[in-house]
Image (tube, rainbow, N blue to C red; front, side, top):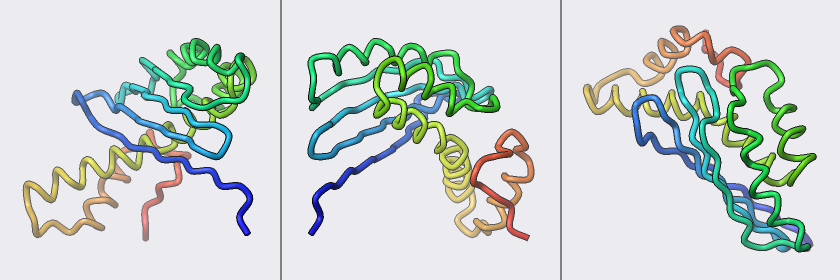
Length: 152
């Protein structure tokens, strides 16, 4: 019998060529929260974060929304960025918000790759998608350290 369940959902859109807008939702039987985070693609810097605490346990929880601004200026390309988010947002405000920011950030390169594959397919429906993905990965060294790898 399941006594606890937590769901996280991350989505991304590209409102401008150099901006990725992430939507993160976390929901369990105690907490429900949501963030919207804009990241400048060229350098991976978080340029805006908005958040909503929808279900929480104490009157202190909603105060963490303002502390999301501590993430603005952090580059998802800098070494140790996830630890920095936990330090600046999680410890000072809300660990759940920090988890959402980190999950959104981990999706940056996957979303960029997906956008490029979609563009390639739209231009040429017969494109070799695995080949195009490998080429994209080889041409984007900034994604080093992400979970994306080039298949040999």
